[in-house]
Length: 394
Length: 147
Image 1 (tube, one colour):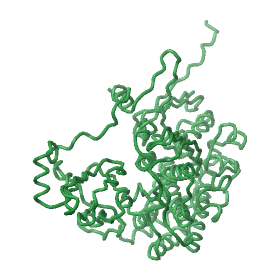
Image 2: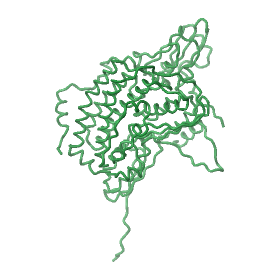
Image 3: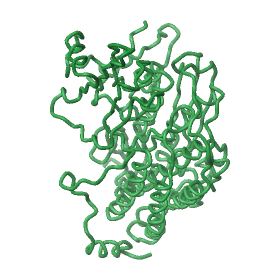
Image 4: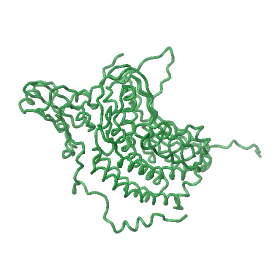
C-alpha cells in the first residue's frame, strides 16, 4: 500500500479574453481548489488602441477629442484633465463660469457612472431588478446631459480655454427636476443594498480589504474610500471650481463589497448637493478664453478625480503645434491589485462580483510598454504601431 | 434584513406604462443643442480653414472657388464626423452650425455620407476636377512615416 500522499492538484480556470461574462476583453487565470480560489492573475492589453501615440500626431485641439474617447463612461474627466493641463502649460486660466460648468458636467457624469455601476454590480450579483431600475433612472441623467451638451456619451463640453456651452435657466430647471427625482430613488437604493438579504449574501464580508491593504496596494477612488482611505483629488488637490464648491470625502470602514456599494451611493448624495450648489451660485462671466495654437515648451501633471478614482495626465510640450508626449494613467489600473489580493479564499462564484467591485474599465487602462534594450532601441511611429497592432491580431 | 426589497417597485410598475420609447414609430423632439449634421453658410465663410485644421476626424474639406465672390464648396463626411462641434466653436464667422433636426444619418451606401455645400455649378465643376469621386473618399489621413 502506497502511503505516500500525492501532491494536491489544483485546477486553473481560464476566463477570457473572450468570455460571455466579460463586457470587455481581459484574461484571468483563477487557480481553484474545489470551489475555493487559491490564486488569481490578470493579463490586460487586449484592447490597446495606441491613443497616447496617436495624439502626438494631432494638434493640441484635436488631441482632446481622441483623449476624450479613452473612456466611454467618464469621457468628460479625460477632456477636463487634458484641458487643465494644457491651460497650465500655456499659462492661461479658464474663466470661473467655465470652471463651474466643467465641475457641473463632471458631477452629472459621476452620477450617471455610479448609477451605471450600481446596475452592473447588481447584475453580476444576480439582482437584475436593481439593474433594470437603476438604469432606468440613469436615463434621466443621460437626457439631462444630452439636453445640456448635445450628446449622450462624449459630451465634448470642453474646449481649450473653457467650455462650449452655457447653462441657462431651462437647463438648470431640467437638472434640478432630474436631481429631485433621483434623490429619493437613491435613498431607496441605499436601503435596498443594505437590507436586501439576497444582495447582502453576495456582498457582506466579501472581498474585505483593510485600510492598510488598500494603502499598500495603491488603490484609488471609491475602492480605497470603502476601506477607509480618504483619498479624493477633489479634496486633496482641488482643481477647476472645486476650491469654490468643496466636496466631502465619503469613506466607509468595512472594506467589503457592501461598503463599496454604500460609498458610491453616498457619493451620489454629495454630487446632488454640489450640482444644486453650482446651479444656485453659477459665477457670471465668459465661457472661454482664446488660446494660441502653439503651446510653450514645458511639462505638467494634471490630476482629476474620475468616478473610478484618480486620473493622471502627464503632458509635455516642445513648443510646437502637437503634444510631445501625453501619458495617461487611468484609475482602473491602480485597482486591479485589490481584486487579485482579495480573491483567494473566496468561492469562484464571487470572482465576477469582486471584479465588478472596482468598476473596471478595461480598454481605458490598456497601455503599451516596450522594454527598450540599448542595442535594439528604436522609435515607433504611429503607422508602425498601427501595423504592429494589425499583425498582432492576424 | 429582508427578502425582496424591490418587490414594491415591481408591483407598482405593473400599473405603469412602459418607459421604453417606441422609436421609430414615435419620435421624441430632439433637444435644441443636439449635434446632428453640419450646416454651412458660404456667405459668412472667409476660407480661413481653421475648421479643417481643428477637426479631429478630418471630416471637413473646404475648397475656395472665388474668395471675393464668396464662392466656397464645403465637403462634409458624415461618416468620419465625431459630432464634437469643435469646428462650430473654431469658426469665428458663424459660417458653421449643427442641425438638431438632421440626425438620422445612417445609410446603406457610402455616397450618402458625402455631403457637399455650395453653389451647384461649383460643386459639379470641382467634382469633375478632383480625382476623388463622391462616395470613394480618400483614405483617412494617417500621419506620414518619419523613420
